Amino acid sequence: MPISRRSLAAFLFTPIVFCAAPALALDTDWPTRPIRLVLGYPPGGAADSSARDLAPLLEKTLGQPVVVDYKPGAGGAIGADAVAKAPADGYTIGLVDGGPLTISPHLRHVPYDPLKSFTPIGGVSRAPLVLLVHPSVQANNVAELINLAKRNPQGLSYSSSGPGTIHHLAGELFRSTTQAPMVHVPYKGAGPALNDLMAGQIPVSFATLAPAIPLVASGKVRAIAVTSIARSSAFPDVPSLAEQGVKGYDAIGWFGLLGPAGLPPTIVAKLNAALGKALADARVRERLRSLGSDPMPGSPADLSALISADYAKWGKVIRDGHIRVE
Figure (cartoon, rainbow, N blue to C red):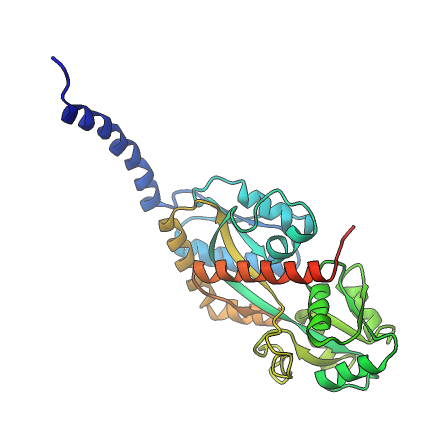
């Protein structure tokens, strides 16, 4: 007896329904086993501290162990690549900063697409840099620093923790925005850059907040401005560059939680809710602030917009400044 079109359609549709059911159950029941939290930096730093603070709080909400998996190297790009190449099942997520997503792709080949290889889950923290000067520099604010640079035939030298870092790009953004003659002097790390600033070997530096806090407090260096639009809780009395007339200037470092592309929305929602709860914890907030960071809770869309905006901004700074790295 020939099969009718209606019977054939029902026959073909039935396996699709039964095949889809296990995947739906997987999303609903998730998580049912430990979760790997990839970190692209080695143990011992600020990134590691944030990961270890978040992991137990995520565990408490999600009901499964969250294990930090260190994948250091290439400025965080090795860790980001490990997240991008993981199965999109929610059992591999990454604590990723802006460097491997918004800066490195403009300077060197990376084995992932920074805008397409990830699923944003939510922001974790944000930290501006601080514009520092040696106490001998005759400038107490941004306007005076710009004028000083313009009066100097060679301009003013500024140090950074290395070529292509956020510290370098913050200086380039300052130079291009204000037209102040600034000469970049790269160092092999933040420590040497700050040491030479304290010694008076270099007059200006764009620095990470955490190591700068005790130096400013002791009077070894002077803080002129922070590089975010708003002031930082670490330096509440130090105005931002934007407040001091450099309109729209914003250069921050940040960390966010991401998964591989294609992460199911139900899993993203659970992870975002767990992250928001963790960032509301008073101890986590205080810990972040002790590191010079502020909590940055928000939606996946907020993090996606930040990645896209910083990718475009730093790409322009790198192209216009003809910045290269070896």
